Amino acid sequence: MQPITCVWQCVDTPLCFSMNVRSLPTGWVTCELNNSSKTADPQDFLFSPETRYQQLVKVEHCTTKQCIYKDVFQDGWFRFGSKLLKSFSERKTWEEARQFCHSIDGELVSITHENENEFISHLLDRVKIDETGENKQLVNVIKHWKLDGSDSDVGLANDAEYTEEDGVKTLHLNGTASSSLPHGEWFHAAAVWDRDKHMAYLFLNGKKIASQSVSSDAAPKDYNPSKEFDIGRKRNSGATLKGYLRDLMIIEPSFSEAWIGFNDLDTEGTFDWPNGTHVTFTKWAPEQPDTRNILMNEDHDCVGMKFGEGTWDDISCAKHLPFVCEKKAYG
Image 1 (cartoon, rainbow, N blue to C red):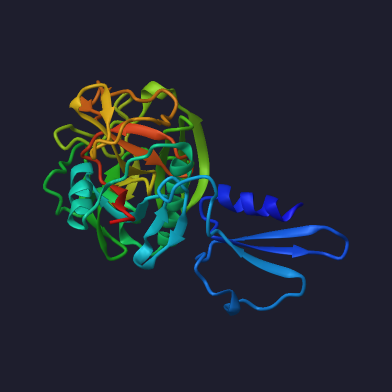
Image 2 (image 1 turned 180 degrees about the horizontal axis):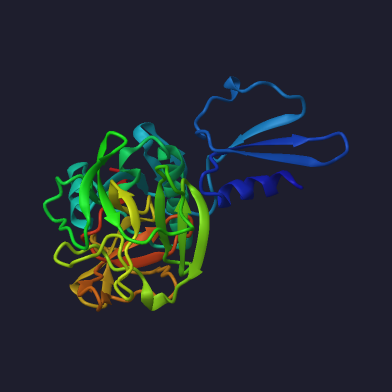
């Protein structure tokens, strides 16, 4: 590898800010990419024989604002070209996210080319890693029923009753026991839907015990409080579980998408950036945009970027998601 190859690897890597190039006696050259600030003092690095520390200071043949400068600043802001970018893990609706960006003299991010899209995707991956297990908003509880008699929207039927079990008040269903479930002990059950893979999974105490392929048009519906649901009963057969239930929850997946500024709020089907930036680049996920969920009578007017993919999906503006703000890097 030639030293210049290492330089261009760093240029093309969104979160590379500097590099170490080492020439070996054999003639080989090793390249180490760093995500520390390119403004770090080289004297702060330990000396290694035959090693040169190099920084991304300048890209030739372009003006200051045309060059792709990358830098890291305090408070989690990154510079990319003429913009300052920062991802926020707090969940907000699209409009709430935009108002927050305005409050810090910014705007929801606009994206004009692939390199910028890739850079933002990397920033979102950092948020997902940094916040794992730390941010209480990582999991968004849409609805929680305690099933102890205190839920005003739960009614009893078919000999169901509230009773105390192991010192805890629970909902008791007097149906037919399932041989596939543990007996005589409490366990945690979770039904999980993977929208992208069209798969449904059943977990018991964190261990997957079953999976099933589900057609794309059979996706679970969003929770609607005006609808009536059965707990522990199959409507097609009338069969009821036998056992004790407590703490039923509907949980939104952790960090699947984050808001960007793209939207068609003004004209249905015509997507624009809120700051008036000319649309020169898009990266829609397969079968997107779909503009509307007819089954849920839900408009899809705002756009989120998918974590891990960097592709875009138009969804309801009312969803609560993380987001990315931008500010001008130059006055």
